[in-house]
Image (spheres, rainbow, N blue to C red):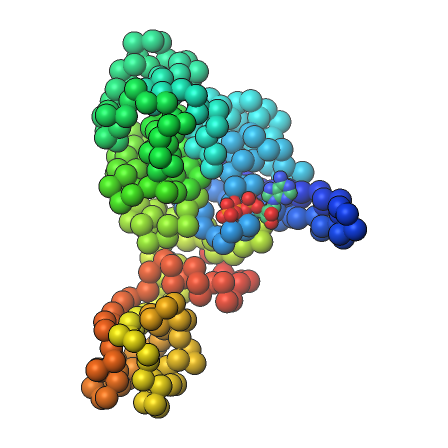
Amino acid sequence: MCSVRGLVKTYAAARGRRGRPAEQEVRASDGIDLDVHRGEIFGLLGPNGAGKTTLVRQLTGLLRPDRGSVEMLGHDLVRYPDRAARLVGYLGQQSSALDELTVALAAETTGRLRGLGLRAARAERDAVLDELGLGPLAARPLKKLSGGQRRLACFAATLVGDRPLLVLDEPTTGMDPVARRAVWAAVDRRRAERGATVLLVTHNVIEAETVLDRVAVLERGRIIACDTPAGLKELVADEVRLDLVWRDVPPLDVPEVAALRDIATETGRRWSLRLGHAEARAAVAAVTGGPAFAALDDFTLATPSLEDVYLALGGRAEGLVKG
Ligand SMILES: Nc1ncnc2c1ncn2[C@@H]1O[C@H](COP(=O)(O)OP(=O)(O)OP(=O)(O)O)[C@@H](O)[C@H]1O
């Protein structure tokens, strides 16, 4: 479906202003090889600034790589970037182009721009707005919607006028749980019923995990791991996650608790720990059996999620690329 080889993109250094030193140039894509197969939902994960948006903008013909090739359904998109519009439905991070239109007109116009006749565009518009529960907002201009509503309306417009590849950059940003669920259901339906291919950029690792077939983890312009969610999770299969929530102050006078603190990630009253199975059993016994129990509000023990993989990879980057 889409094959990327040796992709390199460097942003030029910004000149320093008012005595500040010039910024360094940024190599946002640093030799990326990637294959997205037809009919799969492919996820791109990575921390802020890893180069995800830069990569997808090159795949959608909006940004020209310095080096490397992008081939989509047999088309060379580096040489012929205009062809991407016929192949890709792209939901970028910003939506200003549609802001003046109503929700209904944004969807209809997208369909028309993608070559649908008026009746077909209107029929698809109605079906998509209905599918996403946007009917009540259809007559409202996008600029008068909340952030999450606007995002959902832009997502709706992206779906009109079927494209073989959907590229969605953080589609659920700002959405409430009902809207998010509607987005994932719509993505899944397009794959199941129409064999659509979807490339998804997301930070919402846990939510996306249920729909993703394969995932690439990007860091500083490079792909440091690429596999199925299950394959990636095997990388941390020997670990479990223990979350402890304290009522108030953790009982650091209990030696076992003090020892756990050294390896915990603290967020408010919550401690998150990644532990081996035996260590986790010992930790649970220590915090639930002894004097620490009175200070404990809640605890959960979970098998690793894609988020744990992502965090673990952050610590040991190189050499994990698979398949
Ligand atoms: N137009 C630009 N000019 C200069 N540098 C840029 C430009 N756009 C992005 N960068 C830099 O390139 C790197 C990759 O940015 P990019 O937006 O691709 O990351 P990202 O993975 O999409 O991040 P996020 O998760 O925050 O959206 C960052 O270091 C960023 O600062």
